[in-house]
Image (tube, rainbow, N blue to C red):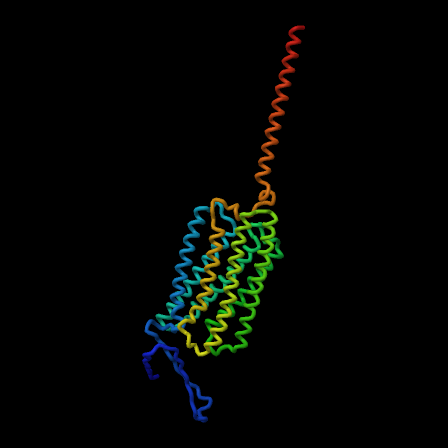
Length: 349
């Protein structure tokens, strides 16, 4: 097969079309291969900035993981179950960004995308998205802070079921976006894959804020000001992130609707970059609020009476013990005095 090379000297978005005007050629099959190479590698110009983004995010997760690990080791005696969940999400974030960077770097240097590497990257992304949402949910429910468990097997099964459904829907959507060709799926098929993810995300948001409302009410009733302040900060952070997400979704829809020919390809990378940064920022806030420390009781679960009446109980117990001790001492002195008088009378007799 003859090879033809075409040099392009102007930056822009280019398309390759095969067209014929002779009706007798209807049904003709064209077989061949096109190779596109940019000055910095084989990555398309629309994807090239994402390799830099994934490299930066890999370092960011590595730095966060290192700081978290040092705190984890320093206060390992005061670790609660929630800290293990946070550690798992940080580790998955590091793996996800590293695998994506390796996948893009390999594509940039070789011009091919091995399906195995892409499949691993997609799976890491789906698992990390699922566990991140489950972490937000269990924190909002007060797990390890207001309640020692999720509240019974029924709620735990619901949380697990929602997580499994989201993982399946997210995995299917990611596979179509990263492994399928442009014309492999119609718009209706893609819509059918997007809708379950949107609906499940809505379920997560409603359940998270409903749980947060109940947790705040419970902490306010118990008058536990330290934990109440902690959850208020967490609630405000989540509210801001939801508002930013809604605004960004609107911008994304506007961006795609007004740029059907990809004329703004040079800035298209900011759309996935926003979601990476938002996810990292939320994880950073959780790590700051629930960081291991010498005083884990400020967010760890305690019994009802222990939370509210510890100091009062200690004071009352000390007072009763002191009064009891004084009365016993006086009775002992009176007994000794009476016994001494009896002995003196016996001697006189």
